[in-house]
Every structure is written in structure tokens, then in C-alpha cells.
Length: 82
Image 1: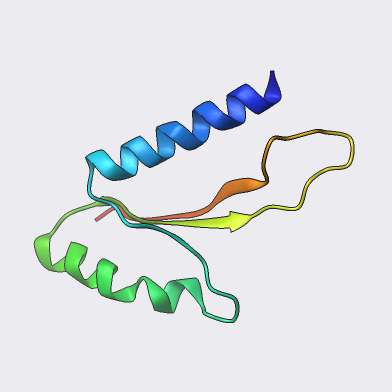
Image 2 (image 1 turned 180 degrees about the horizontal axis):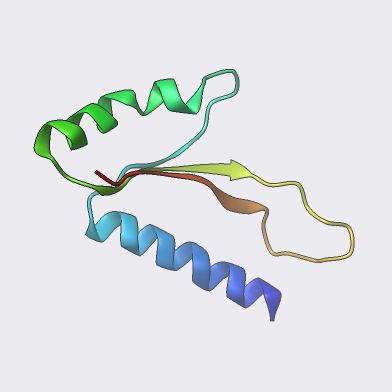
């Protein structure tokens, strides 16, 4: 049951990102997320837009009590609200 929910959530996030042309990428080790997404934030501010503008994926540590089909989770949703 948990594996199905996880899969449904991943599919929803990927569909949302695709429908709204939001980049979704793996976070690179040693790179500050805030610095990496700065060009996207600047574009949003220039347009006067708000909302989610970037999504990072990460490998989440698995809890030993739970069996998951994979360990992918959405790490960060970057958004602006002005």
C-alpha cells in the first residue's frame, strides 16, 4: 500500500512539473540548492510571477521498518510568493 502511494505521488509531481514547465532534477552533491536555482528565481521575479519554479529530487534514506519500492523523494520545492 505504501509503495503504491509513493509511486502515485512521484507520478503526480512529475506530471505537475511537466504541465507547468518546472524543471525537476537530481541535486548534485556539494552544490548549494539556493545558488543552483538562482537563475530560475530571477526569471520568475522578472516576470512578476509566483509559485513553484524548481524541484530537486534526492535519494532519501530508507527507514528499516518500511519496505519501499524505491527511495526517491522530492527534496525541495522552490517557490516564490510575491
